[in-house]
Image (tube, rainbow, N blue to C red; front, side):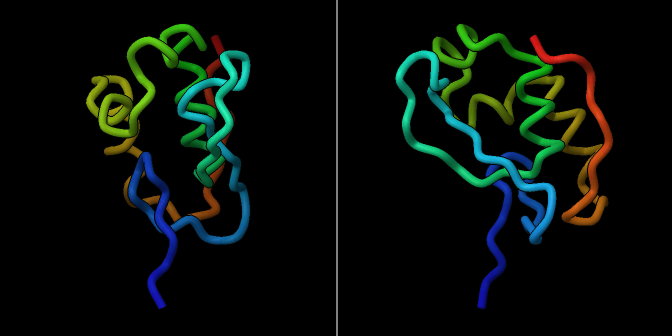
Length: 91
């Protein structure tokens, strides 16, 4: 059976420290949720405002293309699925 993967970093999700991300923020009536590592979710919200997520970064491809997210993905690539440390303050 294939392991479920994080749509941001591509690592296996595992079973701990998992959040759900709305590509369209809930404040803008986004409903569809995706399982994502907690650390990846926190990184998204530390880099982008909800308005930026709505206007520009509402696809996984757009999120992964941002230089700050690319740097983060390279850093987290070899960490285990449940890895978590606090990230910078959310926007």
